[in-house]
Length: 139
Image (cartoon, helix red, strand yellow):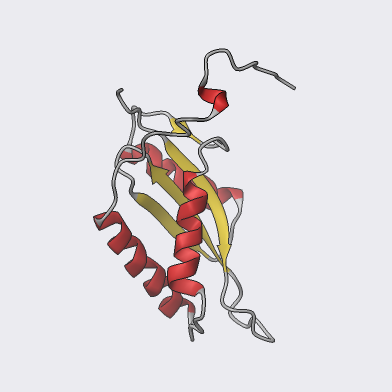
């Protein structure tokens, strides 16, 4: 089975552990998961508006000009697992003193993760929705 390139994009807020005040604000992580390599591509920004999202999509388009980018693929949910891992390995039980320190921890983890990544395949192999007789229902 030939694996198509699918880039799943999701935005998430990455804040510090809940202190009494948030003087430095909340940071936002926009990420894309390349299913053919298993690598995670991300940007961390101060704001999460359409401008930041569009800029990230343009970066992805320049990287893969002839590929289809899946901006919504809830059936995949691979990227949710990756966000959970980022949170678990870089944010839980920590008290980063600055955004720079927090961004460095996230970047270090994602670089390590990408060095050990594998292609994502076998999507819901035993799922009934992959069966050709599954009844399609549109809203």
